Amino acid sequence: MNLLFGNAYILLTLTAFLWGGNAVAGKLASADWHPFTITSVRWLLTAILLLPFAWRYIRQDSAILRKYWYVLVLLGAFGMALFNLLMYLALNHTTAINVAIEQASMPVMIMLANFFLYSQRTSTLQIVGLVLSIIGVLVTTTAGKPWQFFTEGLNYGDAIMMLACLFYAGYTIGLKRKPDIHYMTFMWMISISAFAMTIPFVFWEIQQQSFSIPPLKGWAVMIYIILFPTICAQIFYARGVELIGGNRAGQFINLVPIFGPLLAIAVLGESFHWYHFAGLIMVIGGILLAERFAVTEN
Image (tube, rainbow, N blue to C red; front, side, top):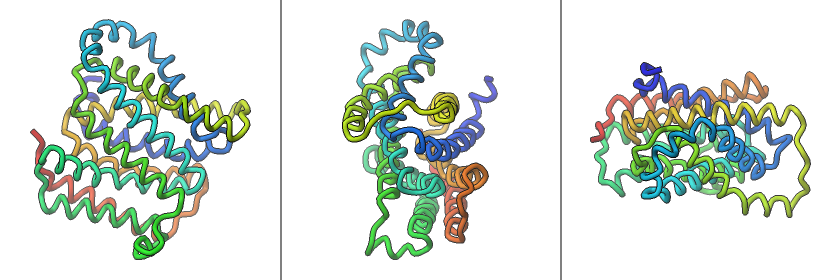
């Protein structure tokens, strides 16, 4: 376990794999769950599940929590709740392959935020790698016609997913402010904060469309989402950021567009087109270039 939690590269690669599965699970869940309801139930059940394991650490960290509670509330509300609310909504209007590949835009957002907010240095070749990745995203979302972005923009689902990526990029930057608390305390705090953030969205959704209890298949997908993309991946990602910093950790999000499409093809039977392949090649090239010439964070 110590070997796992001391190796950022293993942790962040596992994170990307689990998040690739999250896009597929979200697409499956869209048949049985409304997007805001699934997000709310996800974080409520996660908080309930974690509480028995986290309680002793919450008590130990109580003094720190009283001082920095607002940081954790913001991380949970904006990073966990809004990202997932928008992602599940996007999956009602676009493919799991697109949603997976679009997450490659996050490192660009992270890098720009670090540059403007913290004057963090970035190498020229790192910028080239990030630009290459975002071109790959555009090639994918415009079905191989990136110039259409400047005349027609993105379709509804893809535009929503890009907004979701912006919130998660903000969450990654916010992890710089994360207090020194046990990871179980951290996970419980962001889970309960995320749930609280979803409540008004769920009330609005129920008013717009009738609610029905999902079938067994829907609950099975929910269990997968809670255990793997939620609990395991979030702990792995937070630890990875601690070990190598937000800029470098953010590059591994570019692996989601590799794992996600493979899982979407295998599980959902979605079609893989030439522009998906071209976009992936650009994303892979971008992450390798950006990671190879990254400026080490202090």
